[in-house]
Image (cartoon, rainbow over all chains, first blue to last red; front, side, top):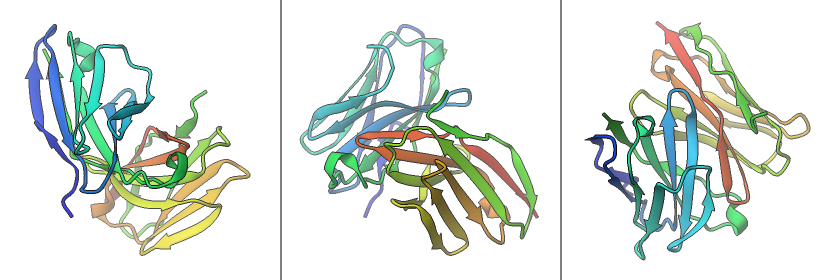
Length: 117
Length: 109
């Protein structure tokens, strides 16, 4: 089975711009989660989508948004970029077979490294 | 207080050593425990997962969970230079997964 894929792998933007990142989950996986990883803060949860619905959200400003399509592929968007948004953005997919998410194992993609200048 | 505490290291050991990596947590709702390995500039890779208290072994890796103490460990036997990476613990309760900060491990040849 192919793993989680993320595009693009690297991105350079300037402050004030917006960016869209894409994630294709493992075939058959229904849940997609997004994380931001920085050296200072570690892995921070952004949001999780299941069946095109956001079912969990982290503590990030509204500039960060996402969506999931009917084929489980997901995109996240960051508007009005700030220097502090420079990070590795990771997507993880899971089968989402268990009740209330118990037992779901997340598999990560390679990430998109975003640099904001 | 963070829900999951993990010593960031770095931890440096000689090849062949037994490595012990640990995390503590405060939320009793966590039911599912995972360890990920992350090489530089790569995404985290799932190493092991377990539901219950006790030990789970997979090759050179053993995951240990003590729910009464809210403490989990990952042991690496006969460590190799290729084990040099950041190790992240993760815990899930309901729809929520929380990651530790990660411990950087260096195994010297």
